[in-house]
Image 1 (cartoon, each protein chain N blue to C red):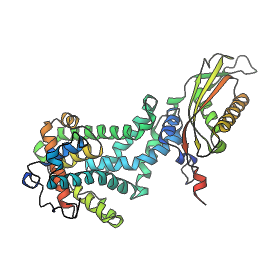
Image 2: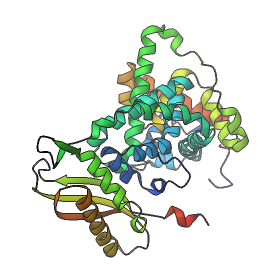
Image 3: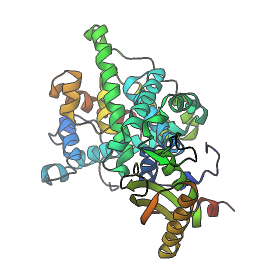
Image 4: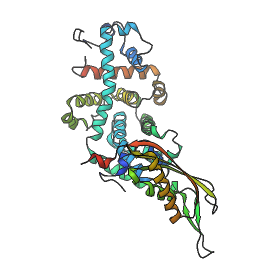
Length: 201
Length: 187
């Protein structure tokens, strides 16, 4: 909008060179494509279009401000959500663990092994573990298992060295706590993040 | 569970958190809930006009999300996935309300939200916008929020609310026009 453009008196078709707000809304929704010269060359329609675009942008900003307005307000429903989700839903397969007493069957869940892997990898060089997949028949003792792990690491880390550290640490941890025959550990660096501990002095 | 200010998971992307949550990591899920829940609640409140209903909707959405996270194909699109679920749940509630209320009353103005008052202190402009939105007649506000914020297509709003497409377009245009006219300095 330039200074010599007129102020918009109203948003009726006569103020918008015959265009309606519906039409301009649709045009804006379509990303102002294909370009419509009768709209783009009309000062009135352009001002209305700018206002519509502004409304859209600022609606999100408004929502964000409202959302942050009262941090305590969300505490109780968040507590409810966390109390009502079923944690067992992600237990996955049973993984056998041998026991001195042959009569006793001992299993750990795939979910708890994933948790073990996350705990082992999180924080190494600032890494955050993402997805953990155990490929192979974990229910058969000694079957070769390949691990697929995604991770996010801080900007500026040596990715090769950190991937190796993650592989070694996780493999060692699994050797201590499980009887899984880990064949290969594939680490995919999926994301980079800023280290939150470095941001605060 | 890491709620503290120094939770290392706070630095993780939505994608990483959604992957972990799909693997059963409640702590990662909680970070997603805290990151996106407040905005989802405010969005639901704009559609529904009632704060307590908005909280119910957001709770339901997150409980549903937890059980369906492993089916989310693009973990990086978790926010739009959640917002879409809020839209659907909110629409469901509007439909249920319509079953109980005379359609003639549907367009009646609703009591203003409690929220805009303190926003004014933060930002005059945003406060004025929030007030203008909350003063809209109910159906205009619903259509406006679903389309402008939720990105729900006209046709879907029309179908779900069981009104003609032209009505949705008209309501939305009237809402936009009213808001723009009330925003000083926008024209």
